[in-house]
Amino acid sequence: MDRVSGGAAALAVVVGLVGTCAGCGGSGAAAEDRKGADPGRAVRGAAEVVLRAGSAGAVRTGMEMAAGGTRVTIRGEGVYDFRGSRGQLKVLLPTGPEGKQEHRPIVEVFVPGALFMKNRGAGVPADKWVRVDTAGLADGNLVTGGATDPLAAVELLRGARDVTYVGEEPGGVRHYRGTADLAVASKVASPQVRGPLGAAAKGFSSTGVPFDAYLDEVGRVRKVRHRFSFVNAGKAVEVASTVTLDGYGRPVRVLTPPAGDIYTGKIRRQ
Image (cartoon, rainbow, N blue to C red; front, top):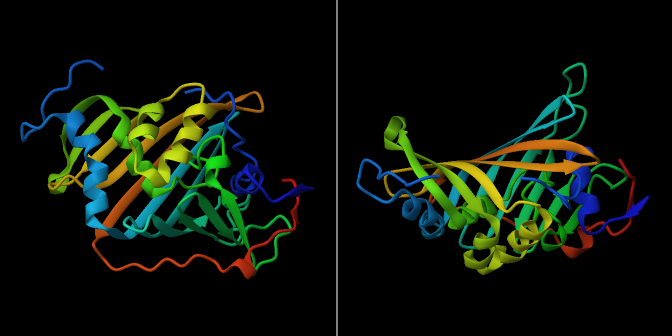
């Protein structure tokens, strides 16, 4: 039995497949894109463009994890208020051996410095929320919540380096590829995510995170895919986390769970 605090609550969201990231493991000249823009500058500036857009009314996340020959996929959907630095996702855990959904969808609410989860399981009452301090997670909640915080995913691009322009996708979306430096991003990111990104920069053994970013004609992130590699319980774990953003500018409402609904008891070890 563990008291709900730090990484313990978040780790069980991915059913023990991803542990804390202590010891986590993780070119060339950039050609100009079709509009003559420098690829690195375009990608590093994308976070600011997203913040100016204000919100995304349609957010989708996908996290594919492979460890010891086992591969699982966790998907989420919801909304995000970038100006308020808060969002909400409904996250679906993998199905059971017979293809049945064995766990109720987990509702996750992201706010500056914290992650709230409902339908957490492991002895937490169904009507209660679990609060996790994201700056206290060794990966800054880039992996262990089962969905990368969309704001953190975008802000991580501020540390982009060795960026190349891959080509144009349908709809005029431009595809870029490079490596995001966690240490750099944690210093230049928006204040509300510097703590979590700083924790990730210390928790992973390599601060370089390969990415593919897809920007629209005005420079907003439409999709970003990061690839994380680390070691958990002696096993190499590969995680590909994708965040897709649409419905920019739509009004969204994200409420922080009231203090009386936060669970402060113990949770079962999974």
